[in-house]
Length: 124
Image (cartoon, rainbow, N blue to C red):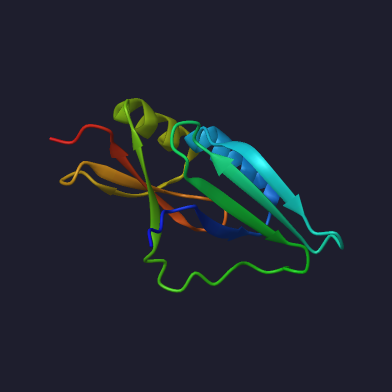
């Protein structure tokens, strides 16, 4: 029996705001959408256009308050060829929330408070 990754899920409070963030900050594009027949939820799958892995954003109509992320010790990681340009973009967007210069990485925060690690494609 062999398992392979399919997708990761993040629940979001404002789907429109989150879709804009993931497009602007990481270039992710919507590849699939599922709306509940009763309108109670929407699932939107985002892809990078390179890997088969997707990110599922789940919006729940009844949800009114921010999600409790606990210690927020879980994150998703993204590599980028032009690390300096990505860092500059994220600084301009105001979403850089932690930098570790010694490790050559930084983290950005999405509209719901999830952390996303950014690291260079080629590490020495």
